[in-house]
Length: 403
Image (cartoon, rainbow, N blue to C red; front, side, top):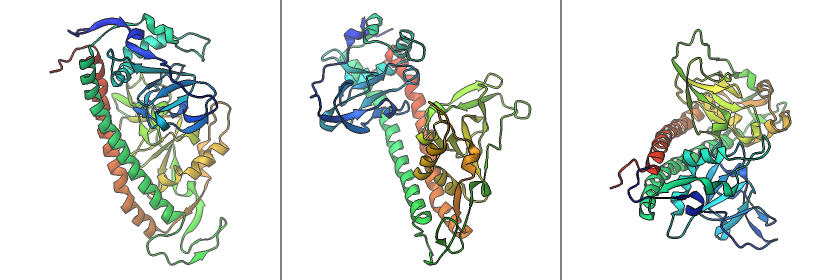
């Protein structure tokens, strides 16, 4: 540490851990589940309202720190917001962190908790049986660090927050663009209200469809898992590996680079432009992304199925595969216990209404720019994330002069 104004104290003396929040038993409050936390997002909002029976309690701005394996290792640490009346409760597996008055800034505490030095300490001090290990509140009494004074904390938090604000804005833009594409898809291909529609329908095995359209299977217009990494024929020095745990609803949180020959055994799925990459494990949870101009080195886990449109535009295929109705179907047919999985060939046998080429090409011309812009924002966010994650430890260690 090199803070000229710093002070070395226990983490527990610097941060409020599980601060007292007065809530009334039996009354309804905003509720946050562990699954609501996304390691790629700074903020988490409540997913429901529940009657208070027990669990962790918190207020807007508090940091929810997952204390159980593997959630802690996966980086499930978020600031909570949008609580009704400013307070709520959630999983017993959260430690709730907050700044101490005149000692630490709550915004700084969030970034402090994401610092590897704090996270690694927590992981190393987990106790309990294998698979259900947790870090206790008292463990942090043994973590001593040199902390900057309040003014410096606020400046550090301001720098990092400005990056997260830009990231969140891009994510909001991407959500808007994605919602627009989905809305047009539904309008045209579910409600059949598309340009130049004649209003004339024909009978099919799944009901009435517009004249000139047909019913087929996904396998008729798409391939799955056709491109596999080969150490012999693919002359690469390294790969950029995409794992299921790092993907959530179209977003890739982290890509890990490996020298070729040192990559995980599951690193097999090669990607090309327009591929829809969908998790086969717990497929109804929405772990998917669209490959837009991927690099040759981008390789996905075999836990994904990679769908490549052959006779329809990729935008149409992607929006069908990631539609809410499709995800519901995936969940219904997946097999297994704690980690149900679906066979990609089962997806390939799904019924599909195939519009005429003119309508498909018109649709693609409208929505393809949405996906291109989404990818540009994703790439910009990755640069911002890399910058933030590079700055965070340097700022925490006082290695950067704050003038």
